[in-house]
Image (cartoon, rainbow, N blue to C red; front, side, top):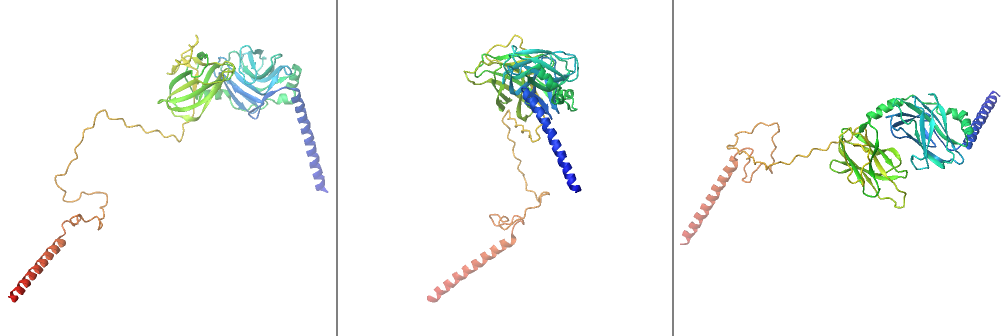
Length: 450
C-alpha cells in the first residue's frame, strides 16, 4: 500500500513538471511566432546566424554572450549575419541587447541584403544609453527591404580600453513587440551568463601572436587596386618571417558582390607552399587558414585576379595599406592601375604565429661546389713491409681453406711451407731413379740379343 502511494506521488510530480514545461515552451513559442528573425548566443554558440569580428575588433564567444574589444581605435566593426533574412515590410524594428564600458555614445549599424556587405548608402545611426549595464537599443528600418547582413559599428572611434558584450540582435513588428520581448523571461535571460574570461587578456595575447607588415598603430587606408578587374592582375608582397605561422590576415576594400582572388604563398625558390581561391566582400578583414604550420624563412604572398562570369555585376578589389614598419617589398607592377592618392608604404597584411611543427626535420644544407679543381694528393707507398702486424682493436680475420692459400700454394699466414717443398724434392728424386732404372733395363735387353 505504501509503495502504491509513493508511485502515485511520483506520477503526480512528473505530470505537473510536464505541464509547467509545456506551458513554458508554449509561451516561448508564442513570443517567437510574433517576432522576426533573431541571432543570439547560448552556451558559447551563436544561434540563428553569425557574429564575427571585423576591422580592429576581437570577439570571443563565452556562455551566453559574444565579448568584444578593440585592437585599435580606427573604424572598429562587428559583422552580424542572419540565417533567416528579415523582411522590413513585416518586421521593420531592429532591437539588440548589448553592453559596453567607456564614454562613447554614437554608433552605426550598416545593413544589406543576404550575402552582401556594408555600403555607405545603407546605414542607420544610434545612440548608446548612459549606462554600463545591459541595454536594448532600437532602430527603425521601415522601407529598407530584405535585410540579412548587419555591420555593427560600436562607436565611430573607440578607445582600446573599451570592452563590451552582445546577447542578441532581433527584428520585431513594432516597438511595442520589441519592448514586450525585452521584458519577457526569454528576453531577460539573454546574456545572463557572461563567463569569467577577460577579452582584454585575449586581445593582448592575440596581438603578441601577430607579425605585422605595417605599423599596427597606423591607420589603414585604401591602397593597390585591381581595377578594372580582369583575369591575370596580380600583386606580390615579399618578406622574411622569423617565426612559424599558419594563417594570414588581410584587410581589403572590395565590392559588395563577392570578389574572387587567388591567394598563393611561395617560398624563396618560388615553390608553391599554399594556394587557394578565396572571396572578399565589402570593406573587411579576411583570415586565410593555411591548414599547416609554415617554417620561418623567406616567402612571397601573391594576390591574383581570376576568371569570373562576365555577366556578373562589376567587382573590384583594393588591398589596404598602412605606414611601413617591417622590411616588406611589394610589387604592384601588374595590378592594372595606379594606386590611390592615400596609398601608404606597406600592405595591410599580418601573419598569425603558431607553434612549430613537431614532425618538421630541417633539410640538410647542400655542400657548396668547389671554386677550383682539387689537387691530387699522392698515396704514400711503404718502402719496407713491416716485420710484424701493427696492433689493432679489430680481431684478426680467421683464414679458411679457400682464402688462406695464394695462387702459388703458400700459406700467407705461416710464411714459406717447408714440408710442401721437401715433398716436392723427394718426388722428383724418385721419378729420376725410376727413369734411370728403365733405361738400364732396356740396355741390358739389347746386350742379351746380340
